[in-house]
Image 1: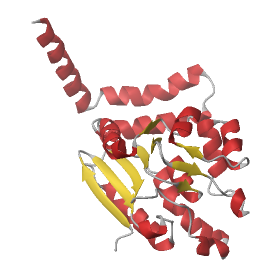
Image 2: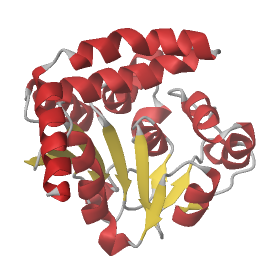
Image 3: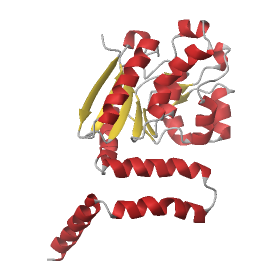
Image 4: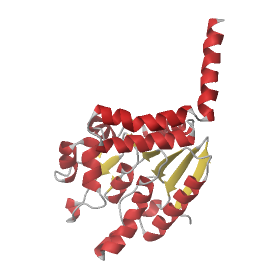
Length: 252
C-alpha cells in the first residue's frame, strides 16, 4: 500500500498521507515517499501549488513513537525531513488539516505557507505531555506564525486548539466544516496555481525574504528587481492585453 497518495487537478498537486490505521504517523518509509512525491511535483511544470492533507480520520499524529524511543540526532533528522522537505519547497503550499495534527504532524502543517483547517480538527503540540522537548523548529515556526503568547499557550500550557481557535489566533487562515475542506483547499490553491508558476515562486521567495528586512526602503529595493523582471515576461503582455480587452468590452 502506498503511504503517500498523489494527484494533480487544475495545476494543484495534492499529497495525502495514507496510513490511516496508524493515524498517518511519520515513519522512514513514509518520509521517503513524501520526498519522492515532492521531487516529482517540483519537476512537473504543470504544478503551480501544493495541498498537503491526510487520509481520515487524522491529518498526521506525529512521529512514530517507536522511532522516538530509540532516537538519535540522525534518526530524528530523517523523520524531520518529512515536513522539512515540504517546508523548503519553492511552490506555494497549503495544509488542509482534516483531523488531528500532533507533534511532528503540527510541524507538517506549520511548515506550509497557508493552513485551512476543519472546524473539528485539532492542533495538539503534545511534546511536553510526552516528556520531550519540542523539535524540528516547532517553537520557531509557531512563534513566527502566531506570536509568543499563542506559542506558549499551545506548547507550554498544553492548549489543544480546534479549527476555530486556530483561526482566531492566526495559526490557520480559515476554519471550515469538514465536508467542505477538500473543495475549499482545492479552490484556494487553484488561485495560486493560476498565476504563472515562475511568478508565484518568485513572489513566495520575496515574502520569505521580508522576514529579514526591517525597513520600507529596503523592502522597496528587494521587490524592484523581480518586479522589473516580471514586466519583461510574455505572460505580462498577454495578461495586460486581456485586461484591456475586458475593459473595452464593458465600455462598448
